[in-house]
Every structure is written in structure tokens, then in C-alpha cells.
Image (cartoon, rainbow, N blue to C red; front, side, top):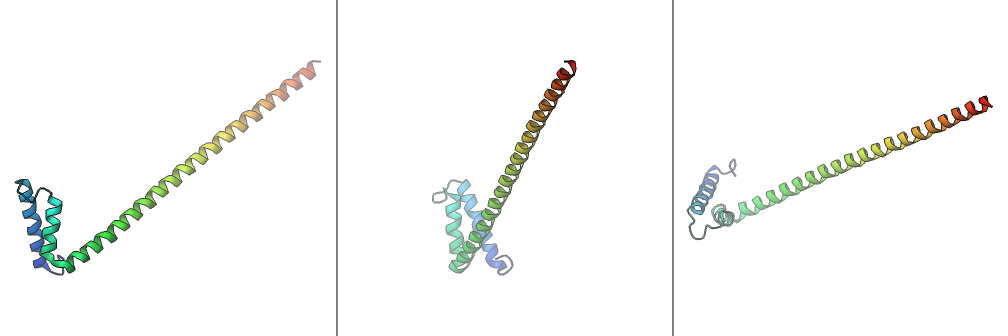
Length: 116
């Protein structure tokens, strides 16, 4: 709006500012700054601009949601990989201990056999 219709943009900014000021003064009808701004902006810019803005907002929110979903999926995947690595490391350590114990037993048995 700022680029396509600077005058309309200026009117919209003024409407927003006025709603914020009236809300601060606790004027009737401006208790909800969001609702009052939406009503005033829709009246100021007209139905066409308003619908276009809603469409842009919807598109933006979908992109943001998708981005955050992908980010969460990536974090989950990293956590799963880390858990798998930890499990693999724990399994390797367990196998190493078993081999070390088997080696010690074999050494002990060989020492016992040599002593007899």
C-alpha cells in the first residue's frame, strides 16, 4: 500500500495512530485496540485492499507455520540421530567390556593351565 498508494497508506497510518491514542484514553468503542484498528482500517482502505491484505497475511502465516514445522522436524531428526549415536556408542562400550572380560578369562585359564 505504501508504494502503490502513498496517500491511502498515510490515511491508514493515521487511523492506526488515532485508534491507539483513543484506546490509551479508554474511550468507549476503543477498549479493544485490535478490533477498533481493524474496523477503522477496513473503512479507510476499502474492501478491495482489505481482502488483499487478508490474503497476504494468510499466505505469510502459512509460510511462517511451514517454516517452523520444518525447523521442529529438523530438531527432532537431530535429536533422534543423537540418541542413535548414543545408543550405538553404549552398545560398542558394552561389547568392548564383554571382549575384555572374555580376554581376561582366557588369560586366567591359560595361567591356570600353565600352573598345573
